[in-house]
Length: 70
Image (cartoon, rainbow, N blue to C red; front, top):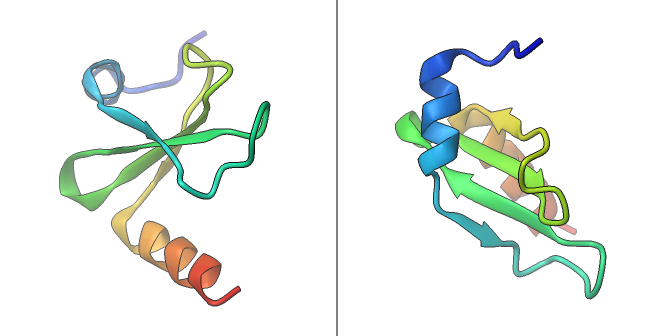
């Protein structure tokens, strides 16, 4: 059963995905897509039809801030 709201599913299907510059080589690639309202979606590049993690704008900023401090 698909629990994704139809408008989110449509937005994800039209999203422009880019590989993270922090992804490792080979099988450690993460892709990110910008969504409406500053939200972001993350997915495993090896499984583009698989699940995506949806983040609010605030959560995305926190994640990027935490990663930048490492």
